[in-house]
Length: 306
Image (cartoon, rainbow, N blue to C red; front, side, top):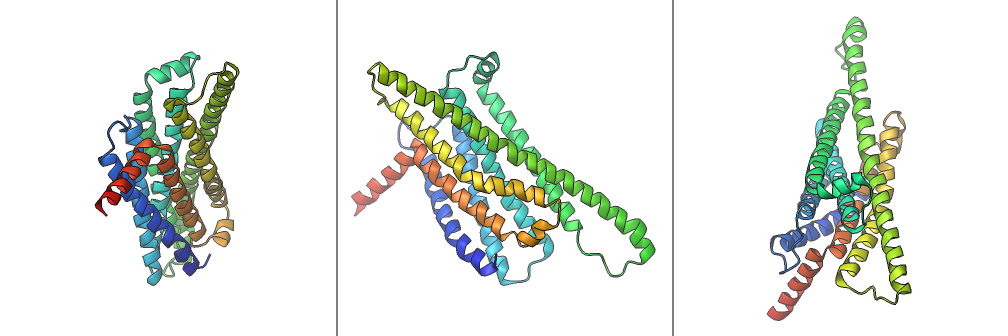
């Protein structure tokens, strides 16, 4: 992808996502009465907005860097930060899907019953461990990738054979370890999203069929909200599917030299991240009542002031 095309695609995506980040942050800070989500859901939504906001800021930095010859370490750092914020939101979506799955679907297995009773502690601890693993893998990968630069011209052959080659082999090994850890991190949330939202949707669909057979109405606000959240969650999983598959493919291609041929400047990957981030925000705006009612309240206030 050419630099101008990356800037052309990413700029409107970044501006739109930034606008919704500001609006949704305002909705969370000053929610409409009766729609404030409780923790841990509120905590996860705050993290989603935090990560998305900083992802847009770093994306803007990468666009500005196109105007000058940025140093290699800065290019590597900005890419790693975009991956960090994007993948952290990917993990947030997985934990939100687990939260709704445990909350909506009746649990009978002792393990799931125990998880439901201790959902807050499990979610906070699990989310924290996830972010630590992601931070370590990306930090190690970024540092070792920066060190895997061109061979200095002032090295003699004996030094090359003994010092530099050994150092490069160590850096390459650490880079592959970080890359494999990153691959596992990206794969687990994908399967979690597909499993949890799929199981929740199947349960609600069967529940609707039973209510239809018994002539009951599926019109209670709570039931409508559960179905809306579930359907939107499946849409989010579908939106994350292309970018997550691309991310997993990237992790595989990093092992070879093919990725440097396919996406040498990482513009394709960063564009995927921007597109998925915006789609994720729009899905939250539709599924979460705190955002929907907040936007309606802001629109009504603007109409009254006219």
